[in-house]
Each structure stands twice: as structure tokens, then as C-alpha cells.
Amino acid sequence: MSREIKFRVWDKDGKLIGFNRFEKGRWQCQILRAAGGSDEWSNGVLHGPQIDQYTDIKDSNGKEIYERDVLRVEGYGACRSGRSGIS
Image 1 (cartoon, one colour):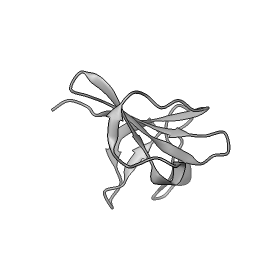
Image 2 (image 1 turned 90 degrees about the vertical axis):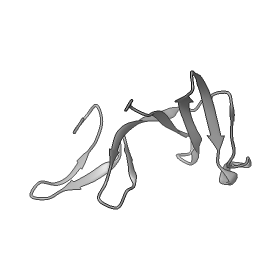
Image 3 (image 1 turned 30 degrees about the horizontal axis):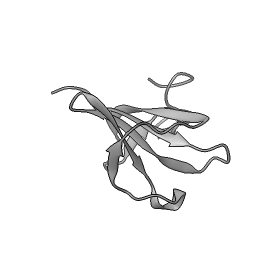
């Protein structure tokens, strides 16, 4: 099984725009309804000032963990995933 390549894209105001993923040899994007688009996947790539990569890890509730997510680790408290914390 290969690793899923996916990114979460934010606008300059810190609002989630959508997601990019690499699937079947090409990039696809999902624009969220809150950003004025649909939730369908389409060809192309979203761009924004903040992009977080999916770590290919899910929490105990099945929620995807991305870089910069704040995690609570039993016995250690809160920490940040990604480059500045847990990898």
C-alpha cells in the first residue's frame, strides 16, 4: 500500500480553502463550499499562503492528522505535529 499524498490549503485569513491530493498520476483539488466552490474533486491545484501536508496518520477517532495540527500526547501534554514537533 502506498502513502496518500494530500495537502490542506488555507487562505490569508486562516480559513480552510480546500484540499489537494495526488491520485492516479495527477493532482486534483477539492474546493470547500465555505470558500464558494463545491465539494467535488476536480483537476488543478489550490494555492494559498499556508499549506499543510497530510502525515498519513489518523487519530483514535479516525481524523486525519496534518502538519501544524496540535496534538495532546498522554503524559506529555500538547505538542505540534510536523517540522517543528512530532513527525
